[in-house]
Image 1: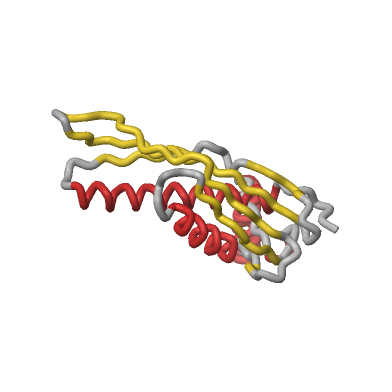
Image 2: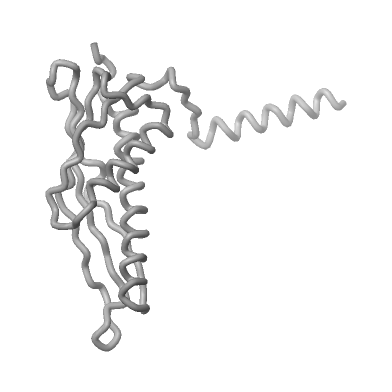
Length: 170
């Protein structure tokens, strides 16, 4: 009876994991193992945005199994095309709710410098934040919201690198 119960539990667990669409992927499942994050170009007026994008993109690539090295045959360039901070609501003469909109383009090259793929990670990405505090708190909240937005963009970029890039790289 215990054996049948264990088999039944294993079967139900297996069916649950298979039916939800969630799959585990190993490093061997990546379309390529190494990538070089060459340029992060900031075409906006927001200072330091390229540094945050580079840091978060680098970490996201590593977290998803890529080896980031300057000797890689695959080269990734990122262009920050647009960054806007929009006022959504005010109380009195003070803004209390903001929207951040960011558009990014990523370009993947092969070892010869030929463009393999150019894509915009579900662009534009949008996030919101509310604040009624002093200026230093507004700046801090904006930085937190911007970094969260960049993480979402980088996650989408890596997803597109893994699943939507042509399978024949050689």
